[in-house]
Each structure stands twice: as structure tokens, then as C-alpha cells.
Length: 82
Ligand SMILES: [Zn+2]
Image (cartoon, rainbow, N blue to C red; front, side, top):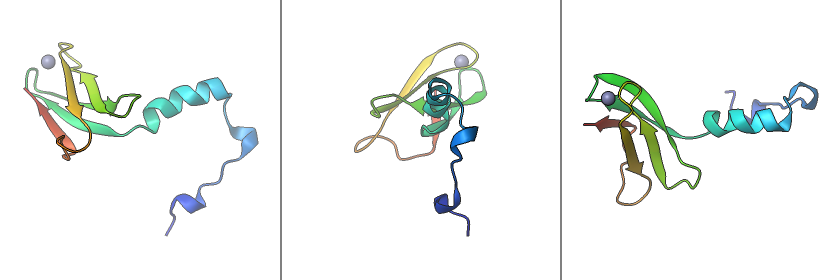
């Protein structure tokens, strides 16, 4: 039914370009769901700007994790950080 073709942008309602860029950078980016074994926490990590890796940090202890994109990387949507 309603696919992307049905989304209509109304110019007058758009935020200024600078704000828009900020929002899109996180909203439009692909993400992985991460289960943090270190803290029994759960969060998302986002693809980096180059589009080569998913990168993020544990929301509780700040431990970094990264996951490769593409051949040889993971195709799972859920990722376990140990
Ligand atoms: Zn942690």
C-alpha cells in the first residue's frame, strides 16, 4: 500500500538545512541492534559516515564496538558485544 512514493515533502514545513542534516545523519542511517553482554544492556549502533563499519559504545560502560559492513562482515541485524 503506502510505500515511499506516497511521502510528500512540503517545502514550507522543512526545518533549516543545517538542522535537517543533523537529524538525517542519525535517522536515515542504518543501524544494528546490540546486546551488550558486559552490562546486560541493549542499544543501537549506527553505520559510520564512510559506510564501512557500524560503530558504537556501550551505553553503560562506554566500551567501543564495531562491526564490518559487506563481504566478510556480519549480515545479522542483531549483534552481541562481549
Ligand atoms: Zn558495558
